[in-house]
Length: 492
Image 1 (spheres, rainbow, N blue to C red):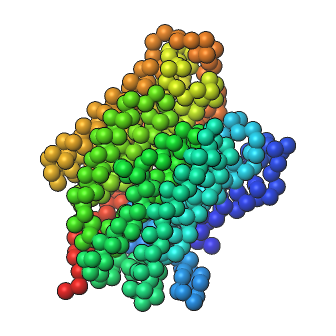
Image 2 (image 1 turned 90 degrees about the vertical axis):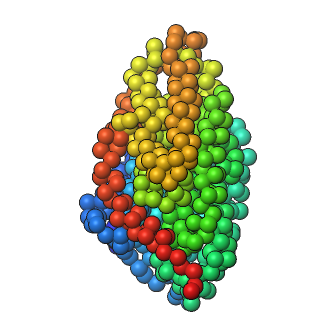
Image 3 (image 1 turned 120 degrees about the vertical axis):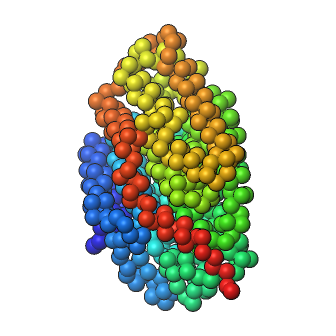
């Protein structure tokens, strides 16, 4: 079995074992097995990085086996510089989420842990798939565990939120399935994604394919105005669900633009680039303003995620190396920072059972260690230099200024909005005198919570101070993608 298959199936197998043998009466054993499963799943991804060859845009660690012979469907896996980091990020966040839910989840513990392990494997499958049908199966299968996570362990309106999440994302994906079938016929019966990149398609066909893919990926990102499902889902989802949703699942849509929309329909991507830039800027500016008026901490960070993902799609469609590399770096950084923000809110919610900003005030007086971590993550969310949140946004802004000064200036305004809503929330929740008895009785983070915060803090600081290892991996693949997208594929 290849390394990518190990990365996909190790967490899934552990998840199935948990479903088979776990009971609430054995909760302690279930938690330890889940932790072992998540750590092993992370460790098997590390050789992907250590064995990755720089300086080539070719797919590496390729595996290809016949799956459905009649329709030429293959179990075809591989990663390049664009997808490698997302495999590692997914496995890392999975470890964090298992530790974070250690004491919080007290019912159906085996099902909760199994859902996250299986979801992790499926998401790695999305980032590794080189066969259209395999990609689609993994892409859609991720909905099932997340739907259950929201619907079983969520808040009071969990069923509404779970249905909204499922319907929004499923409806968009149906058009993508039609696009995949069209590409299958256009390529004389092949579901090979890399072969689709070379198809000579007319401008009309490219436009139709571009918007078919847009239907699925824009909802998943989510881009404005398709973002309305996200705040509701975040508010109702359990803390671990919010962390994985923001850190990884939103990236599935953005990754789809890089693997499908841009290389398969490059002329349409250029033609509709301005449209994508406008939607991205609206997300960056307008949604940032919406975040400023939120009273619920989770809703505020949810809108913040939409604004930060606006940077990602902006970076893609300015078609220069700084912009695209910056967007990918921003995706990875947002994975660390958004997970940290939601898990920080979870620490407070577990103690006070309120997400309302008004329920807090002066938390630093009773939880000084935790407040120090929260300050670091808040600064990273603002894009403070030296943190992961700065690197990608700065690269995208530089790329945008090269593309068009005013687009760059508008994008840069997001740093101001980000600082405004994040620091205002931090001020009202953490600073000042103790606001009420609930805050007065708070206890600082325990060793388990400290471990979660410390791991994320190390990731946020390391990426902020040493971004070169991240960009070195992706540079050649990004250059190859842009070269490919620059060459018209319209039939002569």
